[in-house]
Amino acid sequence: MPEPLTVDAREHGLAGDGVTNDQPAFQRLVDALGTAAAADGRPRVLRVPAGRYLMRDRPTVWRSGVSLIGAGRGATCFVLANPGARTTPVPLAWFTTKQHGAGPDNHLADLTFAHFEIDGSGVSTEEYDVLAKGLGLQYVLRGRFSDLYIHDTAATGFGCDFLQDTVVEGVLVTGCGRQDSGEQMGGAGIGIGIGGWGRVERLTVTACTATGNGTNGIFLELQNADWPLPTGIRITACHAEDNRFGISDWGADGLLVTSSTMLGNHEAGFDVSSQGTSGIGGRGGIVTGCVIDGNVRDGIGLGNTPGPYAFRGNRISNNGRYGYWEHNLAGGDDEPTAGIVLEANDIRDNALDGVRVDATMTDTVLVDNRIRGNGRRSAGATEGGGTGVRCAALSLTDDEAAWPPDGHRGKEVSVGGQTALVTWNTTTELALAPVRPGADTAWADGVPADGSAYRLPAAPPLRAGLTVDAAVSRPRMHGNTIGDGQLVKTQTHGMCVTRDGRWTDGRVVDNDLSQNADAPTLFDTPPSGGTWRDNED
Image 1 (cartoon, helix red, strand yellow):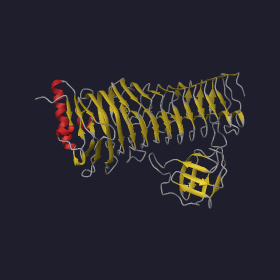
Image 2 (image 1 turned 90 degrees about the vertical axis):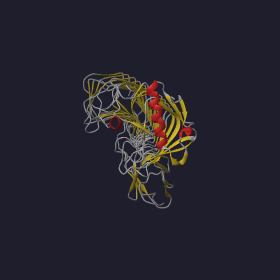
Image 3 (image 1 turned 135 degrees about the vertical axis):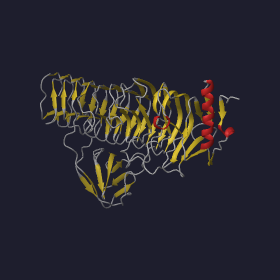
Image 4 (image 1 turned 45 degrees about the vertical axis):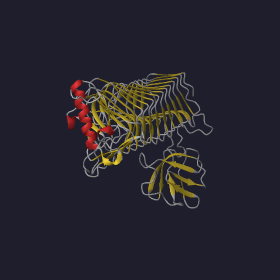
């Protein structure tokens, strides 16, 4: 007799008591449903009632045409553990190229994963293993992943690759990448490998939240340098907070990122670089309508890409170093980046330069941006200690201080042989970044004792709206407001070209460079060629 189209897991041997190892019964049931779906071409649904289902020491190999539906986050929870197999990663479900021969002609189709929780806190491997995920599926066609809560996995939480005609929606990932030092591959909240389906991968990631994950909140990563960069991928209405990087494009073509928030991430809110497996940065993307705020270092970090890329209508604010940083990582593509567009962005209140160029660019366009009130890291060197100094897990207070608000933003404070990064400050309190994503303290070796001596370095003297420290050719700069309306101005100049910078054959027209602290411009290397007219200074 064929398997019914919908099956209740409790009626087929799963206990859901948090003690019984349900993995063997789970695998048998998935296999039976997969075999039935393959026989008659009719997808099956495995419904799992409320309970805690222990998946111990072995991952479950998934089958095409089998959907997994729980009773809701916090109600149906799959508990992953490997006490008897410390060298074995235990994702809830896996199907991969290396282990199972997954590919375009051997894929998973017509499946939904929805309404359940994955607790990965019970899995620890002897060495970091990228396969110690919550979900680890490759080559999925017509998939839907909805209303999932994945947390505390040793590697990436949602680590599924090559998703065609697929939607990832309402997925919450937090505390994933526990065993990732921050330098290893994977360790993200949502990590999606791309390129396996060819030139177009139709994928939407929407309304997802990624917090406190070891590497990325959400990243896309081209898996083979010889593959074409895929287009057709969208990230919309997502939130990335307290990850090493918020959202990263490591190899897509034309990634569309809209209406998302990237807050308090440790390296950058949005990142394009060569850090992925293939060593290739994304290109042709559009980031629009996003809030990129309060990241510990940079708002946007972009490099190792030939371009183009466009950033339109974003708020890029309160970041601990630069609002936008053009740079190349060593070992990656370092050819000139062409066709970068910064249009109608609000780039304000960042610690150093609003826009910083440290890599060669051509045909750059800056139009109608408001680059104002940057250079907030304006306070001089200071030190203190003794009575009135108190340290807490994420703060340092000196009752005798009179610091300019946010004047120490992004600085490294030294206390008793330890250091921590300042995210913002009041006149007497320094707020500190966690020592790593997801941590609850800024101190690697414990909270310093009250009264401990501390030291803060001086701010750099130049903190401009736009600083050029590399060769920029054929730029177009029009209609920008680059100034500082604060009562105490901190943005020293509207535009700086350093001794190592070049600004050639540019068209700079109708920009307002007035109201900066020191001067409208500072040209250690004067611009050459092109047009400079009708700019207010």
